[in-house]
Length: 232
Image 1 (tube, rainbow, N blue to C red):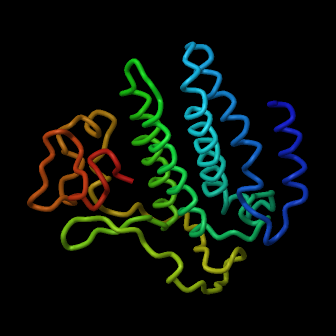
Image 2: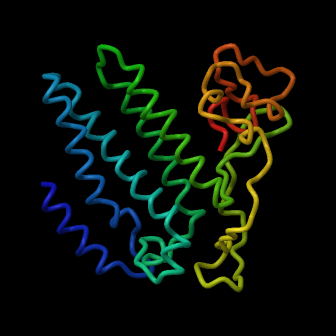
Image 3: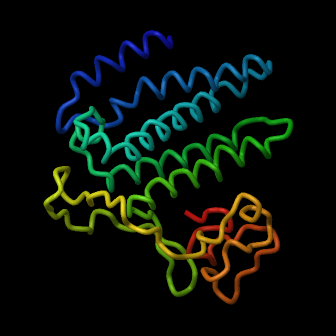
């Protein structure tokens, strides 16, 4: 199956053109990762977990492939290397909803998995993957959520944002990379390996509202950055 997926990947990439489905290009990765996740249920002798783990693996593979494409987009464009976004003429903004939908699918499928102790798996496959998505898009200027005056976070309607052409050679509306640009200032600048995720909310100082209760280490909806450890 894995070898067949690799062969199929090469064919799909070679035939991808503007207008092709981006998810068609990610399918071999999804299939390969789905098989790996499903096999963990076989090893654990829990056949009831095979279907949900297969779905989780499929969506995890999708996210991994998409994030890799987004992270490499500008570098690939500058070097003239193949990238699924340029090959299919898909904007970075259009990829974020695909990742968010996959994240939701992972969370729903996890509810059907019978774990002996699923705390680590749930943390890695929901919170940590969510952080990776947020971090990847935020670094390129595409945050998926914005804070409201009440602290609640609502999805940005990417469809309402006009696509404007610019001097940088790429898809319309894509910002040019600026290697000299200094990092955005905000609560994430106080994050360190020792302080972030230590359930003290130190790394959220300055971005939480007055009603935020951080005793559990998760700021939830009251933080502009998402939660205490999502300081992307």
